[in-house]
Image (cartoon, rainbow, N blue to C red):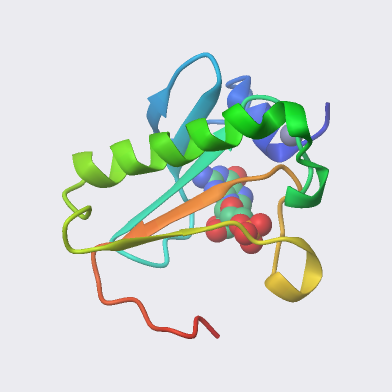
Length: 113
Ligand code: 5GP
Ligand code: ZN
């Protein structure tokens, strides 16, 4: 499939991988917006959060657990961090394979803009 993140998951495009198992992949965002900016993706292609189905419930929970694991490993769990999943145009989604941004290492503003 001609999807950027599917291609990263298949190792056709290089990325700085920070975590991988059978279900998910996590890698450094190429344009980091915070000292820690990692993307967690399911290996399964799902284009937007609106396409998440009942049978994906465990997978999405697993993505959250992977994000928590990364936050702990990077030492930002206690201070705080943010998980973000943008959906469609107004939210600024630019890659249509769902991904959870894990952002931290600085004070994050709210509202996010
Ligand atoms: P979105 O805007 O869809 O929520 O987030 C897409 C993210 O993917 C952006 O933060 C962008 O910097 C990142 N990104 C886009 N292309 C690549 C790439 O080829 N490699 C990596 N590592 N990150 C990418
Ligand atoms: Zn994909």
